[in-house]
Length: 277
Length: 216
Image (cartoon, rainbow over all chains, first blue to last red; front, side, top):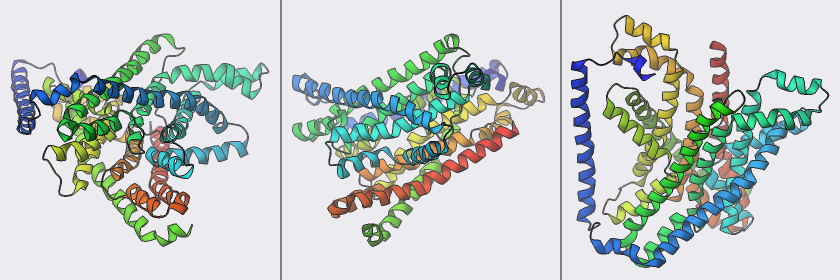
């Protein structure tokens, strides 16, 4: 696409572009240098600050934090997906008294901050923080999964359902054996992308005192002293970004592979009301 | 129920602050996000690289980490904010602009190739092609996804409430602590005020989507 927007650059344009690039790189390098020098003034780069990573217990705590983050995400994803499937089927049910209340519930769940739901479960049901985190994630993400799958079903040609009903399948049997397999396959990239959101949202557990990676950083900084806050935070943030980045890549990979394999290819349906968070 | 009525001024204040945070961050994010998208399709390689790297990193960083950085790590490094709202607005707009950029870029890709070809064949240069032909059409098609991003922004602003900013969620926490016996109603009140923003926005997104779908 980008090549359509402008001519193939000639020698003059290439020179201007090169000069611009060099200036840009210098500007960014300068900005980096400036922040690094501020950090250096605070003594961030003194070796003993980073010596903290020679203590095995620090790595044990970081490991525990990653474990807690991934556990919450995995448990929430495993519960949220089937629940989303059920909510989706209820949302597109032919029976109005199932469809309409489900629609209201989904609207409600999608419109609320995840952290508020976690907080609600934590205080009102007086559960532990793990249950609160998982419940908050499940409530929100099952609603999103339901909407994604619904968009997938609606993107199928009408004939799929009509043919299913015509050969005598019940409405549910047609959904189950004809529409859902195709819809889920088509929406796989969106579903995996939503997993990244779910994974990112586990960090909200920090706010409800769930001992995930970020909370462990805080605990370590309180224990070791403020001098070590930055090194520990830096490593934790890098780990978070690395995990999310890998899952995002997975989504992109599935999308590329899927466009060859899935029947009719994966689709980019602009899903109504799904916040691209 | 009484607890909501008794604390109505706090709720309304929190609601207005949430609205303020969202609107200001939203405007910054829209501007910066569109610039990022323009950089992403520009002929200058360094701009493309910068835009791509920025979007990739920001999209994979949890917002909580950004707020933790601004609220806990930066003060230790000697950077303090007179008003933490400023930090919240910076964090929220930096975060949201990455998603806006992706939305605008997909909009640019959705404009038929012939539009850009026609514009170029009558002698327009890149900046003219982009601002006069491509972006006006692209922005039109991406209004629904953009509204959804703004809905997410309103919800994300609640994270600020956990870090020193008094907005709807911040007040909710305070009221929940003060009224231990009526936590349920306190939080239902908070939820109501969030839905007051997000649900109407969602309806607008759906309406616009239908309009655009007919137009194309």
